[in-house]
Amino acid sequence: MNTLAIIEKYYKKDSDLYNILIQHSTDVTNKALSIVANHPELNIDSKFVSEAGMLHDIGIFMTNAPSIKCFGIDPYVAHGYLGREIVENAGYPVHALVCERHTGTGISLEEIIENKMPVPHRDMRPVSIEEKLICFADCFFSKTRLGEERPIDKVRQSLSKFGETSVRQFDRWCAIFL
Image (tube, rainbow, N blue to C red):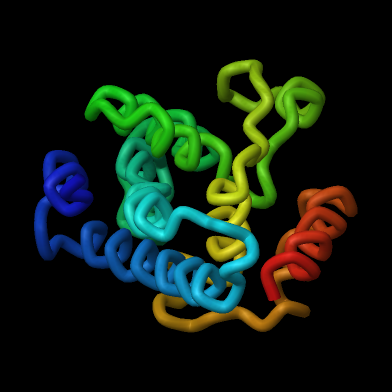
């Protein structure tokens, strides 16, 4: 799989948004691969992680998030399922699930319905160990402070705005991955 070729179908190479996406995705992927290397007992597919990690945010260009140079029409929360559609259409349905399931610590169907989120009504929480790992690694990096890894306490603080369930899930992942 050539992840850059897939990305460059939708992003102008060396544009601000392209550079944000590539830097962020590289940071997330490198963190995830470091965890894979430190935990051989988890039998995580490193090739899949390196590919899906680079593609996890491919849907952001379709959203309205001007602070990260996204001038689309959809709300930012939709970038996961929009990315899933892109990656599925490229012929990678399993990688596509990472796109849909990586937001925060994942989004349950109940949260989607309760909060009237403008996304399809289905469970969007990570299932496979690789999905969980990329979701976890993504929590440490923002697209507005590129290259800066957040410490655990800042990640927990950031996730707390989504509720205690997200923080508890992150803590469970810390016990597995760190």
